[in-house]
Figure 1 (tube, rainbow, N blue to C red):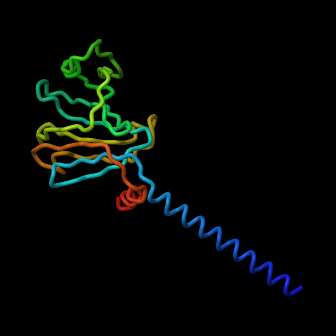
Figure 2 (cartoon, one colour; figure 1 turned 135 degrees about the vertical axis):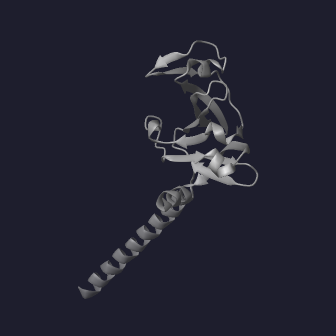
Length: 181
């Protein structure tokens, strides 16, 4: 009877070790799995930020012609970027895009959908007085789980050109960035 108990204990320990090994391998694979991200760089400084599964983010700024806040809703789709719509309280800042159709009033602002426009990257001329930011936050809860990050382009890169490109980053780096906050 004692030999049978010892044998069963050895089998149980072997099974547990196998399960722990499998769980460890699966955990490492999950942490190394790449997730959608944006890569922002001016050639000297580089910032890589994660996106939610749907890939939406916002590029916001003050329109230099009308001095009006503008929010462009962008989407990272596959290996490209596209603007999907624009919002502003000043209809002229929306009309500035000269897209077909008319801006529609939505909650005290105007919104217009963008025509098809896939690009491999976005090049932004950063001018600090126009408060340019790229954000992904709680407003995108409908589109996917964004992490609530914000990149102030002037603070990060100064006055100059910034290239925004689609990227991927390991899930472990996303978790590390959350932990460091």
